[in-house]
Structure formats: structure tokens, C-alpha cells
Length: 180
Length: 314
Image (cartoon, chains in turn yellow, blue):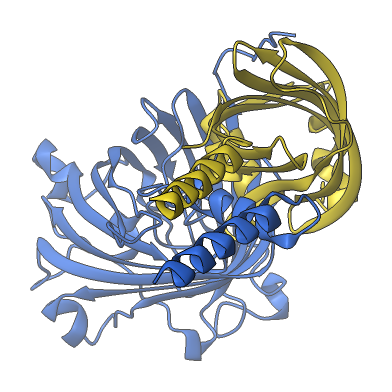
């Protein structure tokens, strides 16, 4: 009987460990750039993310094809000519949150995440600043940062130079729920 | 028994302690695995940009212009480069133009276009509808894209023969299905059966059929992100065209280079067919590659967008 109790305790601990992992399946990512002829503005709500509150590990991924533009042709050019989404289907971030905010206490904590940011098959080591909010057990992360096209070998042909800004603003919003 | 149970319990607890240790890889890999299951690729996404433009050289592609877009087309064919009508005296064909086509394609919806155009060849006006009925899917649940085209041709010119005494003889009709597959980001191929009906056979010669079936095959191989080689071939299944001696008829064959510059698509090509419209080149291709009767041609496709200019929320 004693031993069964031990095993139960072990199971309990497993569940405890599991509660540190938070997942999000519908993170919203928007990209925006201002250009003389036309602003580029697209949104995806298909971002996925996993956050381990115990270790600070953060993984993030968004399918390039899931970005929706107002204009079908712009969306096609984005996938076909710039992001080459058939070759590089995902944009990802894999890293760690430097701070260790207490996720059991409600509040808003400024955080920075350091890791590998991969877009268009090109990896960049970046530290991205954001905000972690805890509200009644739910954790959400939000961040806004700039991505330079040339950092990720996204070519802009001379002829359409004015149509597309060379730096794109990316906004990320993810609300996490405890996993299992 | 007791001992082994204790051992298992200890083992489990030890394993847990390890798992909870932030510096080990165990949790990292579980995060990875979890990410993998969460970000499984979505099923049923349509394949996009099978071709860059609505036209290749002779053929139309499965592509349609999107809703509220206007595609302005200028297609040109010069004269024979070599042979009896070519050579230096015509600046290798550049002095002549066998056909000029000015056309418009407008997107009623993303999949349905209305097309209008005029050819110099036979002073032909044409009006048509193009409908992209099936999209190829990334997961291959739909392996091909299918587009249907229906067109009416109308000859405006004045003829001294009594051919056009009957007004209806000015009309021709074309029904076409285009079936395309994007095999990779570089390679797209299409086949297209066509059925052509001429109220008066053209050319107006004894034995010529009013109706016949044709089949075309075309492909595009990208050599850079914005440039591709295009090959386009068409065969009319017509006994008259197979057997007639004077004039002889030949299959249309074109080879070209397609260049995309964001909004514009240029195609620079060489083809034996003198005419641009299906109504003309299916009926009447009397030029042969091996006789030097091929010509330089180009297609310019410019898309104008009548969607409301996007206003940002920021």
C-alpha cells in the first residue's frame, strides 16, 4: 500500500511538471509595412507556440501560407516571389525568455527572449522584447519587432523597389493555456 | 516484490526530478515534439501561381485575374525571320507584323473572368468567359487545376466574296478545358482539349471542316525566381488540315522566355503560328519552322487593380 502511495506521488509530480508547459494554437501575427504606393498589411491567426514557464523556453511558429492579404494578387506575390513559401513554409522562433516572471501571480511583466529567428530559411540570432501578461491563470505574450528583408535574403527586385518597404513590422499576440 | 516496487517508485521519482531540471535536454525535446504536433501542416491549401500569367505563347493557362483586376494584354507577332519572306530585306521579319492582339481580361470574381480582344489577323473580335473551376491542392487531394473557357469570335471585315452574305457566317465558337499541374515551384505543365466551331469554314476552301477538335500541351520551367522557359504546342485533329496540299497546314509550336517584374509579365517568343487568337491559329497555320517561317513575338501583360486602395488600421 505504501508503495502504491509512492507511485501515486510520482504521478502527481508528473502532472505538476506538465503544468509548466503552456501552448497556444491560434496566435495572431500581423505584418505591416508602409510604402509610397501601397501599404502592405497581412494577418495570420494560425501561429502556434509552446512556452515552458519552468525553464523559460519559448518556441514559436507561423505558416507563411496562412497570412491573409486584402488583395489576392499581393498574397500570391508574397508567397511566390518573396517568401517562397513552398520551400520555406514556416517562420519560426526558438529560444528562451531571459526573465523568470512568476506565472502564478497576475500582472504584466516586460520580458526579452533570446534565440534563433528563422524566416525564408535564414537563421538570425535575435533578442526580441515583449510583454508577458498573467491574468487568472492565462498567460499571454505580445511583442512588436522589425524584420529587415535583407537579413533574411528576401530579394526585392529594383523595378518594384518603391512598392515594398525594406523593413517589415511584425506584431505577435499569443494567449496560452496550460497544456493537458 | 516489495523491493522491486520500491525500486520502480524510486526510479520514477528520479526520472521526474531529472525532467524538472531546467538544464537538461529532456524538456527541450518535449517542447519540440509538442511544437511539431501543434504546427502540423494544414490540409487542403490550394496551390498558387501555377503560371505567372493568363497566357503562355499560344495557349491560355489555368490562371485567372483576380476579382476587380483588369489585365491589359498586348500580343505581337512579327514577320518570318527566314525563308522566302524573311531575311535582311524585311530586317528578319521586324518590318512586318503578321498579327497584333489587344485584349482585356477582367475579374468578375477571383475565379471568373470576362475577356475581350481584337486581332489584326482576320479583323477578329472575340468575347469570352473563363472559369477556374478546380484548384490543385497542396496535399494532392485535388491533383490538377482545371479552367474552362468559352469564346465567341466575330469577323468584322468586308469580303468581296458571298461568304458573309449570311451574317451568321461571321461567327466562330470555341470551347476549351485547360488542365494544369504544378509539379514543383519550377515546373508546371498543362494539356488542353479544344473544340472549334466555325459557322463558315476558314480558310474558305473546298473540303474544309466547320468543326474540329484540337489538343495543346504547354509547360513552363523556371530558371530563376522571375524567369522561365515556356514551350507551347498545338495539334488540330482535322483531316482537311492533315491532307491538304495547297496550302499545307502545320501544327503550332512556340518557345519563349517569360519574365515577371511584379505587375508586368513579358513573354518573348519564337513561333511558327502567324496568328494569336485560337480562332485563327487553329484554323490557319500555314507556316513551317523548318522553312524559316517562324517569327519573333512578345506578350505584355499588365495588371491594373481596381480594388479599393488598402487603408491601414495603424
